[in-house]
Image 1 (cartoon, rainbow, N blue to C red):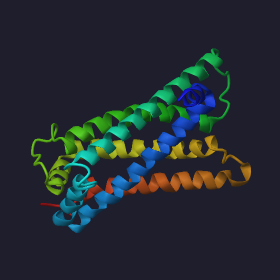
Image 2 (image 1 turned 135 degrees about the horizontal axis):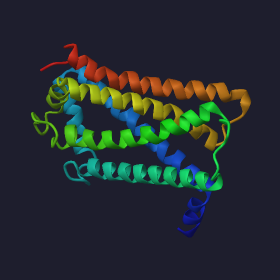
Image 3 (image 1 turned 180 degrees about the vertical axis):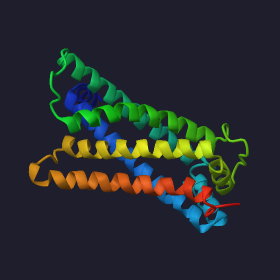
Image 4 (image 1 turned 90 degrees about the vertical axis):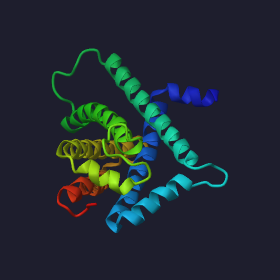
Length: 226
């Protein structure tokens, strides 16, 4: 445990923690999107998928227990990710109290700015998303267990759909810069394949944005309905 704490206290350790938790959260985002694509197969298939997730791990775990454990694990990953990012940002400011007269690298500076405000937007969105489609607290027509109906009725509201779409774009930008810099943190920064790193990051971000934008758009255009 001391070795882990010692590693995390270093700048390299914090970068590795950010990359590792970022990778875990990326897998969740991709898996979550892939599961939601079942909405295009209809209410029965989508609700059956949601029920499968709630029963996953039975009989060792009770109804919904494993799902909530996974959510807690993801929450821990988010906290570590944000904490490491904040601490790295603070170290960077302390190491360079006087700003550059000229921008050292326009792309990296833009990425840094995007990651900061994008992370705040995503955190607020995740909280709203849980209240809206998980607990139903922020959903006037929420029916427990009927995830297809909740999804469709939730996105029939234009303001809600716009908020989701804006958040998805922010997630896409965050993923692009996160995956790009994550490869660099893990040592994949050779100039010979730097372009591949950018292409992979862009492709992943594009898949996530297109896939998740499709849900509110499908509801608003009548492709998905109740």
